[in-house]
Length: 437
Image (cartoon, rainbow, N blue to C red; front, side, top):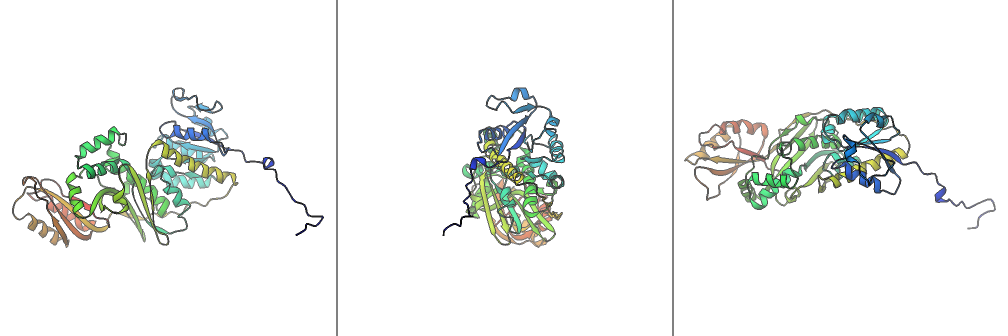
């Protein structure tokens, strides 16, 4: 088609297009995650992000020659608040002074990116409201599962679905220990020492072993996926310390293995939530996760089940998640100010009263009538036995055996467990594990 004399072809010179200035970024904390975050930012060439400040205690000992000379190193957080920084990255962890820093940054109208699971688990709803009130953003994609992008997926890729359940292997330390027990049937203490030697577990691993770390992460997932505000303290956690190598022998007889599972299911106005060791089918996604990997499964009304698998810890994977959040915030800021309505959150009743089949493992001094006595107690509490398993070759003075139960609620089982623990033949309290299918 021929152009009329009045029509002109416009040619745009890309170099003449005015680019938005890069987002100015302050990094709070120059440790295991902060260092690789700084490295990624310093090596970027797209001019979307510009590292301007690094805050750390004893900053003189932290300075590195590979950091550009125009980056300001400081021990004064107020100097960052008074600067023209757009985004603050909080990577010091813990609650003090991290909470104060994050609140001050949001009140100053600066967006915040954090990997601090304890902060978000305890104060996430309040901080999200504060960010919304001040026209800025709070992103925390690195606070759960490290480099596994489950939280960004919940924010974008799954936001069109209506999620009702979420479950995961959220603690790499526990998964490493349990998978070592499974593979080599070594003592629990030996597996823990291995995890500590490899840097997967702290000298005091209580937060991992007893479920504190995982329930903080589950609280965040419930916030992001189910829009449910729940304190980690309201989520029951059960320790993995009571798991023995023999439990993997019996689990295998049932076609299962054992993993620390964090799970939450929203049903009407009740959030069923728990963290603890559970039997899972060996061929299931959970059963196949080995060593220190993390896995998160979501369940939605329309999209069905989705899985996210990857390295759940470590400086580099977590740094990638932090920088990904930074890019999301920077792109939002470059698009101009937009009002973001605060997340509509529910405050459901929290319960651990799941209904599942159960695995009961006993250590007893062998004598006639043990099974009959236990069966009578279970029958009195309207609990049905599914199977009895007893492997040969054990000392009769310390004999392990297993009873599995048909599905029942935790609240039904608990009184029976208390009564069974008082029996004269019981050498240890009964280990009870849900069987997840």
